[in-house]
Structures are given as structure tokens and as C-alpha cells.
Length: 225
Length: 353
Image (cartoon, rainbow over the protein chains, first blue to last red):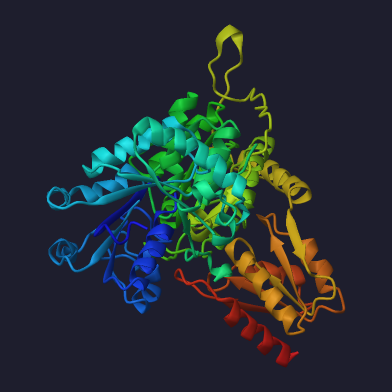
């Protein structure tokens, strides 16, 4: 995984693409490797199903969570805390940004551009081809470009998170992979990971297996908790 | 068509477009914003019109106008916004116009909160607006059912020339599940009553809810009530789950019905037989289904589960009509009851039997 080489990992994508789930899993993997880790919940779009709801689980793993001021309070005010600036000063930490969906969510990232100009970052673009407005190259490209311009940053890697929730099969993941591979060639952006449940990713071919990013699912409705 | 992964709110919007809805008027409010956001992106691509009005009151009156002109039209909002729309809804019923109104309920009263709730049941089924009126209220409990009920909702609205409401909650609006859009050819009915101009000597159509003469107004209301009787006859939808041999029957709709099914499984493991009656139409209410199970000797009690302080429980008591005790358990303000707490409640009821 890129955890060892990169200090800053940013997860962006269309809303509902699975950024939060991946950011949480990535954060826990980072902490388990002994890294001091911070997750920044930068989501100013979603009212619920967000990183801050899993604060207890993350803090138990020794991960620090920075959330929008009113996240989880039920107050719908997209205000970001000044504390976020500290993650650019204290370089002992690995920092994970979970960015809100779409170009609207990516706007929140734009204000930190002066920091990103001075320090390398990795920006992942998470894709689920079974989500609306993400099923073909053209739609994905349009949103990706718009997120880049709103955040004033460049996507460095793609993540294939193609799934239809608990009904996902390896065929669904591979169908997504075919679309994203073509996109990857066109944009000249590599595919870093293929995300999914461990038992499904086991069925990946040898060629693709080193890209596997097995996920534990944290975001669930109340009847599945 | 292949399955896709959708948020409840997106699924409602896509289902509406596929059902031939080309006009959406609304005003943003959490937790239903994905509906107008999706409509704003997609409606222009299919030659439709999305318009963000300056207020909810304005939006519902735009729906009134478009419906009068014969368009397949909808609006969506969440609790405080739906309160603002009540006057318009009453006018639309009075003028006998079809449209779809979506309420993704959040905690109240007042501005309340943004977390899921079911505390708008009374408003939806007893008429939040003024006058003698009803509308069909559909309560989906999965994203797939949201899609299916949106499609059917438009058809029911056209059939009776009366608005139909989809009553969801923030959880159903925000969560994601796999859905399939069934290929279905949309046939929009002829609307000879619509105000589409009177070219070629066509007689003038009038859309109106004002009746100055009291006898005229009574006649009009009686005509509306004939339609409500037909709706009660034809449109009741209900799911019964595990009711055979059940000792206690839970009544729950929407998100609470999903939780109830978990409770039933947990109870089963402890040797307690629980059933579920899930009203899919909250109005017309499945009165006969409750009556039928109330008359079964194995059923000792009913338990209404709601994300409110107890609203549907009143309709259950009216339906059961004293034949069996009807209990209530709920949380409110955006709190969602846990399966464990519900099971404790069931055990308490059993001790009292």
C-alpha cells in the first residue's frame, strides 16, 4: 500500500462512491502499521452516514478525528474547524482527507491549496460504476475534471470501488475494472486499488491481486448494526 | 435492466423521470436534497423543467398550475417544508388535480432536526391542510419499493385526479441499496379536463376550488368522498410477515418495519413468536387486515413501533376496536429505536398477558 510512502492521502469522488468507507479502512490500516494517523472529515455535503459517526471506533484504534464543527449535531451548517491547519504543520502524522461528494464537496478542499502547493499529496478518485452519473467514461471524466478544478488539485490515482452493496460479485467488480482501465489509459492516471470485501477480492486474477484493498464495512443502517 | 446502487432520494428522482415526470418545483431542505439535485441535473437532459422556487409555498403553487395544465408533476420536501405546502395541497385536492408529493420526514416540531423521524404521520393521513380531504399516502421500506411506489403513485394520482404522497424518512432517503428499474412503457392518460387552451372550439376548462354556494360545495365534497371510498376499496396495500401463530403482532412502516424484521428474528431465537403487519398505504389504512388478525385466537396483543410519540397507534386502535390490547413503543426527535430495546418492550408486554 501507498501508506508507507505518502504523508497525505485525499479521497474524492462522486457522492456515494464509497470514499468514507475507504478512508476509514485506509486510516485503520495506517494506524495498525504503527503510524500516527489523523482522519479529517471534510464532508460538508452529507447529513448522515459520515466518518464522524465512527469517531469512537477510530479513536479506539488510536486515530485522531477532525470533523466539521457541527458534524453529527444535527445542525446543518458546513463550518470547518481551524484545527485542520495543524495537520500541515505537524508532519509526524499521516493525514487522510475524506472529502464530501461531487465538485461541491471538493470546494471545501480548495481553501487548503496554499499548503498542498508546498507538500506532495496523493489524491485518489473513487469510482463505483454502478452509481448514477458514474456508469461511463464520459460521465466519470466530467465529474473528475470538475472536482480537480474545484479543489485546485490533481487526481494522482484511481480506485475501482464498483459494487452493488451486499449483492456484489467478482463479475461486477471486473465489469467496473474494464471501464476504469480504459479511463486510466485515456487520462494517464494509474489505478491504485480495487476495493471490495476480502472474500470477493480473493477471486481476482494474479495480475490484479496486488491491487486488492479489502474493506471492512462500517457504514450500515441501524437494522444491520 | 441491470442493478445500480442508489440513495433513496436519487432513486425517487430517477423513478419519477422514468415514470414520465418532466416538471419538478421545489425548495431545498435536508435530508431530501438529493432529489432536487438529481432533478436539476437530469430533467433538462430529457426536455423537462426543474425550477427552484423562492419558497415551498411558491413551489406547491407551481405544482398546482402545472397539474392543472395536465403535466405529470411532482415536488419534494422534508417536514417543515411540507408544512408550508399544506395550503397548496388542500387547493390541489379541491381542484381535483393529480401530482406526487414526497415527504422525507425529519424530527419536529418546528425547525426540529435533520435526523430521520415518522412524526408527520398525522399530517399526512389526517390532512395537514384544511377541509374534508384525503390523499393516498404510500410508505416504502426499501429503496426498491421507493422506485416501485413512485411509479404507481403517479398512476394512482391520475386515476383519481387527487395528489398522492410518498412518506419516507431521512434514513430511507440517505441510505444506499441495490435497485432495478423495470422496463415499463409509460402511458400517460388523456387529460381532457386540463387547461391547455381552447383552440378549434374546444370548450373552456376551468381549474377551481372555490364554491360560493354552500349546496354546490357540499355536492363537490360528496363527489370527492365517493373517490375516497373507491380508494379505500381499491388501493389498500399491506404486507403481513410471520403473522401465522404469532403471539404478538408488531405494526410498523418504513424504516421501523426493517428494524421490526430484525426484532422478529431475535425473538424467534428466544422462542417468542412475533408477527409484523406493515401498512404500505398509510391512507387508506389496512383496517381489515388488523381486524382479521385481532380476531385470531393466537394473537394476544399488538405493538405499534414508530419514530414518533405514537401516531399510527391511533389508527390501529380504531381498526382493532378493543378486540385486543394495542401497545406503543417509539423514540422521537431523530432517535431510532434499537432492536434490543424493542425486544425488552415485547417481553414486558408478555409478562402482562
